[in-house]
Length: 500
Ligand SMILES: Nc1ncnc2c1ncn2[C@@H]1O[C@H](COP(=O)(O)OP(=O)(O)O)[C@@H](O)[C@H]1O
Ligand SMILES: O=P(O)(O)O[C@H]1O[C@H](CO)[C@@H](O[C@H]2O[C@H](CO)[C@@H](O)[C@H](O)[C@H]2O)[C@H](O)[C@H]1O
Image 1 (cartoon, protein in one colour):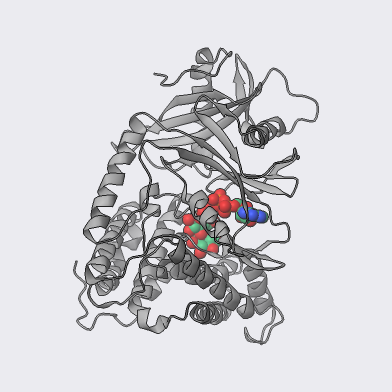
Image 2 (cartoon, helix red, strand yellow; image 1 turned 90 degrees about the horizontal axis):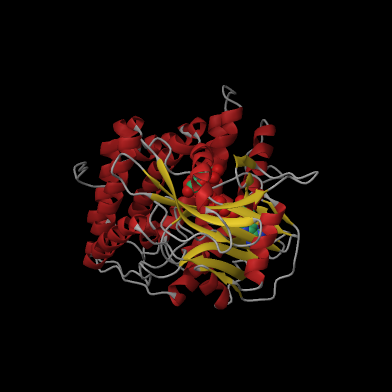
């Protein structure tokens, strides 16, 4: 079944079964493919829009035998009758229409996308928007594939093409635009975006989830923001490329490496000490939160709010336990921390947040820290990612990231005496500096929120265990170690209750 009309002036329908077979082989191997481990994947091309003579923009729906929701992926393809000399595209295979390349790793494909945005063109429901004139610049894709595929144009623009599509405005676009319009120095300027529509059975499932999430949120007094289920969907987002930026993750790893190389010095004594940067990053995060609280609604935290949040964390744990049996020994301790959140925690007002903050989402530029990827956790439905929630979740994400930076270096140096202790020393020093910076920037006393912060840190570590099990199994010990450590701390509840 082919749901939407083919691109104009092109005989595409006849090649859909061939493209379908190529994609059936290629799609599951991609880092951003979310259906790994789900049985009986069946693929269907639901949209096929001609963006240029060479570039076809496909939306592919994948359904499974497990009765769970279908996924939609965006797959721009370049189809050539022959590959010019020196062409370096990524070949999926051959169809009767020609050689089929991944359009985002093909120079003509990336150029066609830029042109579509710059000209603010519209074609069969796909529309380009630009808030500034865009120059024609050569493209290259950003290193490794992550949750999405990014293309850099001439070190001036970076275009993130969202691979797994969720109906609605992507929070990355929505939040970054709001922060930029409000004058934040901590985001890269938005330049353009690509919008389309998702239709058909796959989005019906998502709309139902949307309703359920909204109902649960409303019951707890938590507002959801905007987002008609049949409204536009963000397909790609372009921002100013910050060429002076270095990722916090790389800087942190360099600092850890320096410490490990200095046999008898402490974290505050080595040249690569990162604590000053961690503190400034904490301050930048607080400033972003303060501005977000001005740009979007906020809601004061009552007991019912925290109870609803705790029940959401329990559900996330259920999913992780089903996927990773190794979490089972820590279930009781984790649930006890979530119960403490429900029963005795305090927390600052709920608001819009980053949603997946870690050292890999922050760039140190000449003028300070810039945060990016306000998309939230890529595996969650968009309505959930746009919900007002606790800013402590972002803090917890960054705290986890300091642990990751220290521990990931240990993976390469297993068995070296004393390094585990030094890893903790580095992580503790930088976690403390980040919290100090956040307190200075926000005026909040974070000690008052210790119980909530621990629950959110555990929730993040549980999420990471599932993430690593699916995408990077050799790293799973890092978050598992954190779950073990966080659940073995003094029970946060005076009653010591472990039940749900
Ligand atoms: N404005 C920017 N300037 C320079 N580099 C950027 C910018 N935004 C993102 N990047 C780089 O692009 C990479 C991918 O971006 P990200 O939004 O994290 O994509 P994903 O959702 O796939 O993880 C990041 O690792 C970061 O180094
Ligand atoms: O950046 P993404 O939106 O793709 O986020 C996902 O992938 C991240 C890994 O790249 C993952 O982050 C985890 O690993 C990081 C180191 O690589 C570490 O700094 C983070 O603390 C840790 O959570 C993120 O959770 C996932 O959503």
